[in-house]
Length: 382
Image 1 (spheres, rainbow, N blue to C red):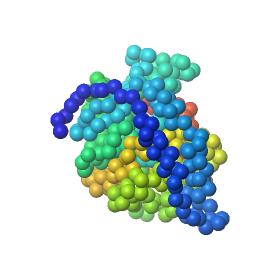
Image 2: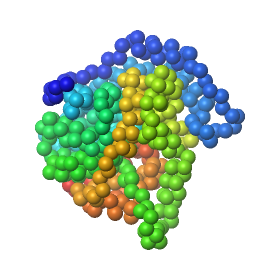
Image 3: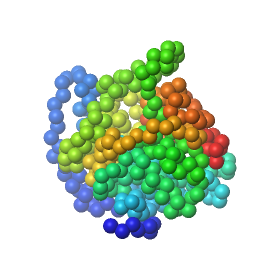
Image 4: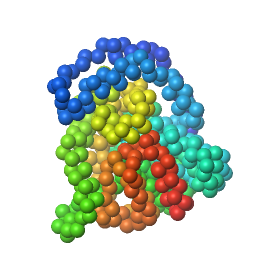
């Protein structure tokens, strides 16, 4: 396959036959049993999935969501043999700062849509012209309208190289990067790969853990102890998805590609499993949850998105601490990054903010906080 650098306009237009097929599959769902009163002990509760599936069948309007996404300029281009789909929303401010936003699993480009208006046109949203950004929001290879990956090796480093090429192809020679979830792996790699172009990297999570040195654990604060307890509970009770996706993702792909309710329930475990705090439940509304799931279902990317975990687990990790300016936002109901461990792996953290609300998808449930953090951080380094 030749490497074509053409950037092509893209518009979402799902055939009605695919939506009809989805309706038929929802009608013919084979439901599992559940032990009465078990709640979320064994996984996402049956009544929660049934309620969402019923709304998906009879109340959810894909065409409205499709039209909303189509309000933003979208494009595709081929990089390293892979189709890359992306939103490219330029600010009305001519000297706006370019910023690439990277999602993870089970998220999509949708997690950044609430940020587009305030970041690209801050004056219209009560902000300052000097805080404006030109936004590039790609679908990670193997996800959404980037489509399934076509060959092995699409780990965080290869994705970062693709992003560097994409930003260069768009004419951006100096820019920033932000990442959430898997994007918090990819964005720092972009900073490592292109230090001359990347002014700074902002992430929602720093995946730095205790090294095993007893001295490192000697004087943990109460907050750090609580954060470690949250991490321990997550790895003990919620990390099965990661083990499966990093070892045998193809086995999972058969089930999820064939069953929309299977795809819904699998994604729900890390979007909203029915046990989230009230503020998160209210913010991550049913339309938002189902549109995220639709971007997997309609593109047949259940297996290829899971493969990201496999590729990353089998890649050579970066071991040297980062040196570029790094900003970190820690939200109350998200993965709890711990500063003392982060300082070991990142030598130039210039902004660290901890918030008393917000969750894993802060771009949706706490956009005001994330927007403020992005403006403040890139105001320091742009």
